Length: 174
Image (cartoon, rainbow, N blue to C red):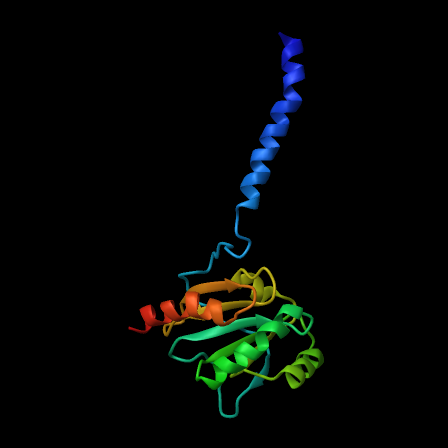
């Protein structure tokens, strides 16, 4: 009897691992849980890299997008033209420069354009950790009361804007 168990053990272990791997492949890596969704956006007590003239270091009383980006992030370049398009259409965009130097962030904005009304500098990444950020780029939809309504991991583009952001904006704007 013991001999049979020992010979069946490798097959059982293989089947268990196969089930675990199959389950893992079915997961969507962009569907990461957000511990902050539904909670208030934490206050930022970090330096401001950029602010439009006349703006104070405070958030607006209407919905807006908080975009986490970095000069070292290749995917951030991919989404930048869409963010500039959103800015031209009147969307309020705020930025969080993630683990970047002031010089590199400013050079990146000079090269690729600046869609943000204000940018905070998160040199050490602690603010991003408070938000539950996994990396750049990530975008958060914040309602008029300052509550995080939605978190998008990855490049913000036309498809994700139309499918994920616009329905939530319509829902929370009413």
